Image (cartoon, rainbow, N blue to C red):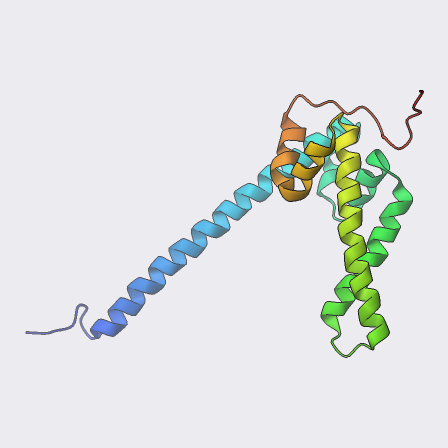
Length: 167
């Protein structure tokens, strides 16, 4: 009697083949879920841009979408600061042989990016008439809160940094 499960394969090989198949199915499901999530994010950003009064297609172009978001919720000039700080922070990851000054500059840029992210989320929240609580939601659970902005009843009230406040 042949003790192999599949003719010509040992039990270990069969177990490896089955395990690999299960792992492949699992990874495939994760990739599928990520793709579906990404599609929802694209649609949410498209709807947010439509609420800005911008064509939705601008939401799917990298960098340009951030420029438009800065323009609609804060100041387009800040986008350029964000871009430079992103390059400096990413540069730290690319070149481990940088001098101490550059490493410190990269870390300062990284901290500055976190601060800019909080301020950007705060201005996005204010642009739709929400407050600090919604800002925390955008910062901690950005994709979910962008879906809420895009599909919810929130209305774009304009750039909060250009509004005049009367006392």
